[in-house]
Image 1 (cartoon, rainbow, N blue to C red):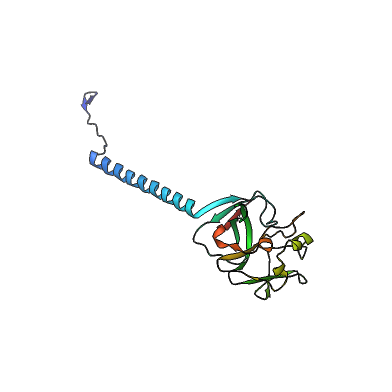
Image 2 (image 1 turned 60 degrees about the vertical axis):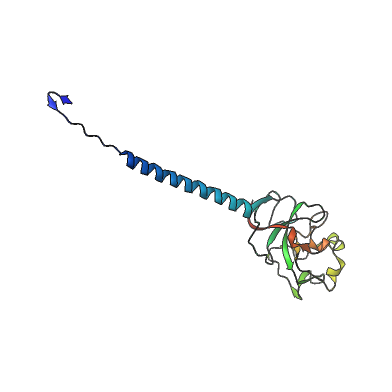
Length: 195
């Protein structure tokens, strides 16, 4: 090419087909890895975790109606004080309660001290605000054995209670009423509360 009578040589920068091919292959591999990782993460999340929207007041003040709970469905251990979501025995509706007793524990209620007793010792319930404000409806629905020597929780069962023990017009429908809950009915352990 000439410009004003002078030969000008044009220099072009270009990528050889081999370099283009290597870059495209690297990009394809990277994209494939990202997609696979996203699919694996989605599968792990959906099989290990779920969420649950709270309906009712039995866990006030700690868990409010409308709160969304994140549950771990697998690979957890249940401890005293853990909050669990389970299928109720009578109607298979999901419910949320706190663990007070596990298999082998003897659970009773000392009405004079107004405290739950686990294996002969008072249970400290830091999450429960009321100082003995149980209503008579609560006691009238209580399993009679709980006000005496107590009941021993069988293998594969839990004793669960709602935090709101004095719901207006009733009581928390929990193990004080229907007894030990089969652990097999637990959907998951609450790991996070979103309000």
